[in-house]
Image (cartoon, rainbow, N blue to C red; front, side, top):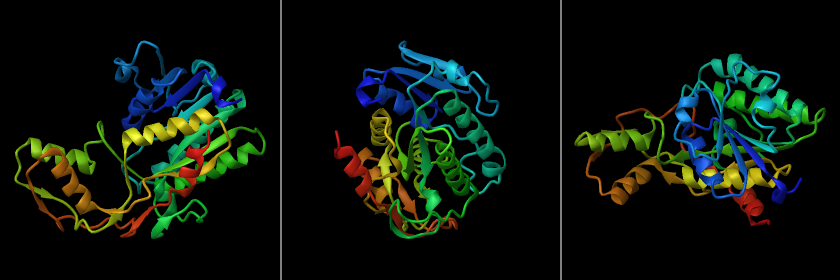
Length: 286
């Protein structure tokens, strides 16, 4: 089925940080939207033309595909257990739940699926990371995400469907979790604090505004094609300190930075970012 014939797009994790921006992006397209969430009250403010469905991946049901209005494509954002990237929960509990849920939908008739993966699948590899690198995850979260991708690829051999696996790098913007860098900085300024504690800030990362991430996810999903693995990134490394200083300047905030207060994470290399070549090639195609 081509992109012009899509009528129904379902979104799991629709009430989350990225999910809300995906819903806003979908509102710009002539599609029927089904928003799935564990707590329906969190989407009480959803647009009137969005079908909100209460659905729990931890307890998948045989009729989940029907409850999601038999979508043409699913944008699968849901994943529990974050931001504790090292917790064994990710592969002991969340991974089997995720696969069981998605397997059920594909078996019931879902023919196009976009799943959000993570740059943590690359592990401690440094520099510009391209999709042809062998994943070497060093966190339970990265391992579980990569394992789900492999499971879905094996499933395609038995139940054919179009799979797009988007490896997200660092996303920022309105609605982020409270422990995120931008949210912590914003709240420190709002409280009138004079000093903001942070890491050394010399690590190079790849950041993309959540609005752009949402636009890319929707663009890829609406194609309903077998895209495979693709990085969703800026392709431009920036130091965390430069990023923070940019936020201060853009917002007119005044607060002194205290770099070196926190240690660098031990599960990330000092310098890594995404290669955007494949994504750009896809987005240039009609």
